[in-house]
Length: 496
Image (cartoon, rainbow, N blue to C red):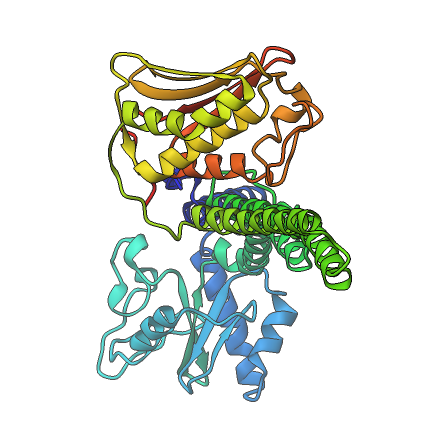
């Protein structure tokens, strides 16, 4: 099986698919953030110093009047969270006007300035002097940051003065658009991730799941005995390769099941044919034996001898059938080893002609043979090759009428040696040609009806030829005789 291309691999598709979908989700989320920021009205930067000082003065007056004042409630009532301010008190309290937690860095800076020994002046009707220090001009701001550029100072700040003592600082706290967008962005991120991963799972695993379900259904059907079930083979990934392997397996199993069924039918037919072939002579033998045993004294010597001769003939026939069956079983089962050697066809043809010469003379049939140049030698088992030619010659003589001929020939066709046995008998009808080599198949109606063969001779010939890796064919026309041709492969190997 060919290896799956990397770009069609399911593993690569899963990895690249999730990477691409994640990148798409992040891109959509980034675009949504930019769009939301562009649509929102973000509050401007820190308020001017006058606002922080005004808030500090108001808070100073409120705390002077009520030291237990709730600062958060005060801001909500006075400013309603519209001005971003942060209050850091000396007693540790930290309050923002909008209720959010101020940045820790900003709180630390403000506390550092509250702890300095510098004199801080804030205009609330009178000046405030630090211990042992000279007054500082109010327009220079507060503490060490005085005189610094505006972008480096702690923004605009105002002192909270209660009963002549500095109690805290009011400073500006810039608003961040991202702080305002945080809940929206978080919800948007969750939605995008959920939708993106769900879409990725459906697009990547959806088709795979359907094909795996098809494979599972096909496996269940095969397990239930339906060997015609097939899984979907579409796609070029590992799942498709698995489906193709599964379908090939079921195809092979189906073919083997059909072969087993055909073999079982053949076995049943063979048993029926063997029983029939053996029953016929055995029935005759039994009848003659019963006649001899019941009427032995009433039969004359000539009749008794004739009955005994028939019994001997039938016994030989049974022996011949059993021998052919055993011979065919050994050949088809591969249980017999062949003696491979060079076999001269001249000697082989000579033995066949000598064996059937007397029968040919008695039947008035002419026997002949010729060997073309280059076809003098074949490689094979001499005994088995002679057996095949003897069977073909005997079959041809049985079906050749008086005055006919049987001719054995050898030649070369495309570097392959062939041997043929041709007779001038009545020929074989076309409907019988496909079954001529089947066991116990007889074509007596097409060949004159004068045969006494068992129907196994041609099956044995075919088995011998196939063990030599050869091929046997038959051609015939009614009234023109039949020709059986054995063609050996160029190297003429013998099946082990």
